[in-house]
Image (cartoon, rainbow, N blue to C red):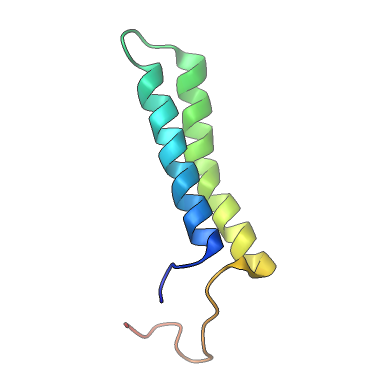
Length: 70
C-alpha cells in the first residue's frame, strides 16, 4: 500500500500543521515570524519523511517494482 507508513503519516501531519500555523498567522494581520515558522515546518516535513523512510519507517518495496503502478 503506497504511503501507508509512519513516515508518510508524520510528513503529512507535519505539513498540515505548518500550513495551519502559517495560515492562522496571516489572520487578521500578518505576523511574519509565525508565518515563517509555519513555512519551515511545512517544508521540513518532506525532509523528516525522507529521513524516517531511510531509517526503516517507510513502505518497503520489492526489487524491480520501484516504477510499477499499483
